[in-house]
Amino acid sequence: MDEKLFEKAAAALPQICFEKPPACGLILGSGWSKTLQMGNVLARLSYSDIPGLGTGTIAGHSGEMVLFERHGLRIVAFMGRRHYYEGVPLETVVLPVELMRRMGVGRLLVTNAAGGINPQFHPGSLMVLRDHINLTGITPLRGPLLPGWGPRFPDQSQLYSPELSGLLRQAGKDVGTVLVEGTYVYTTGPGFETPAEIRAYAGMGADAVGMSTVHEVVTANAIGMKIAALSCITNMAAGISGPHLSHQEVIDQTEKSAPVMSAVLDAFLKRLA
Ligand code: HPA
Image (cartoon, rainbow, N blue to C red):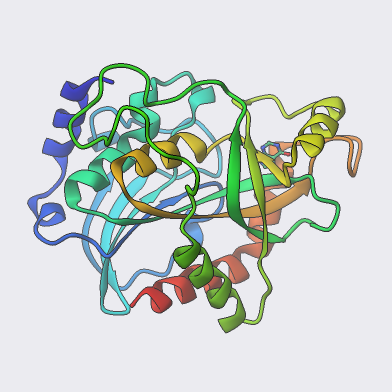
């Protein structure tokens, strides 16, 4: 990891970001950014103004960091993420987590879009991550141990906080929707999976598949943050439903589900307060 890049990125943030630790950090993936209800905005910065983050290349992914107040809480949101499949260094993928560490964030919610493997899911299901499988074989923790990045061999027995996951489930109930729960398998993408791969992942115990989240979560765990994660199941994975998959399908489903995604997200922040 290039610590100098982290320094440069942190130096680009307005001082107000470091004045008081946010009660929660958010990393919002495909389609989720648009659903965030913000109150009083304290600071707003385009990713292109944060060295190391740069402009995303994918439709449906915005790129802005916003510090705001909602339900009496200070929240920092990274709206849009950079993905490993874009060819950017891992520093870029996990930079939001490092910046949140420097702001003093202790609780993190990560969201994404994913393909459903569990046959009980359907497009529009919202899945709380119980655990994950990192199929990429790649970890941001490789290399010299950085200051504040925990022990050399971090425990990963319980990456997803039962307490924060419980708040997510309660937030679902608050807005009249039942959240499902499951294991997320992380592949690098950008190709969607083959039907044979999906059958193999089902056998491994995966309930959903996606191309993000895990590198951020592994880093946040090492740093000592409490973490929850929520997937919008945008399609059933390859071989389970229709004959083709496309990114357009992912975008269309997040647009259809936006009202419920927005309500759950906001109810979660309210529950934190
Ligand atoms: N596979 C991988 N990533 C995804 C999918 C999928 O089917 N849907 C949304 N993100």
